[in-house]
Image 1 (cartoon, one colour):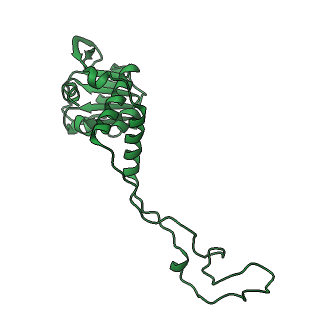
Image 2 (cartoon, rainbow, N blue to C red):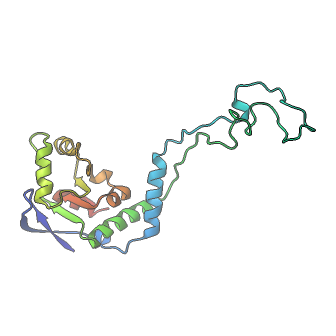
Image 3 (spheres, rainbow, N blue to C red):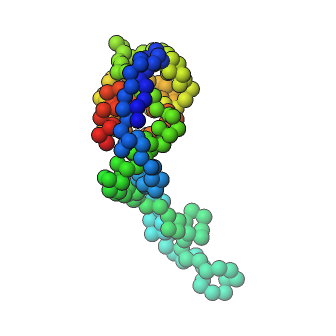
Length: 206
């Protein structure tokens, strides 16, 4: 399929660029999308939650009362989980939440997410550009010209560009990534993708 290329002033340049059907036009697979996003979120978890169990509480181990005849429940020492200030039963311990999925599944999930964006008409291709110096005002003007201001945007660059990144850094609803850093979560998290023209060539080879 072909899509129009715009300049940074939001004008149609008359050029068309081809989006490979094998990347942008497949039948999306919802299950692998779910797995990829789940893995992404799981890998971000620190897994450092920790609570003290009975054996880790500092306190006397003296039995508080006799076993029978007290007229109430049995009590052990003051570190018992049923006592205020006692240990916690089956509390969280540090653990690794990450898990693995196959590379082919990750690739399919990313293609599925991009295909969804094409179906939603949520992809805009812009001619390659840069800023002479970091300027948030210039970046805001670009989103306004493209009639995308106020939307949650993801800009996909062919390679790192410090001036573009720094220009967008203070914008709450705008993220910037490179083709190599693009993943399923980032694609789905954005309402609209703005892809630089030279990025398409690399993405067509996903």
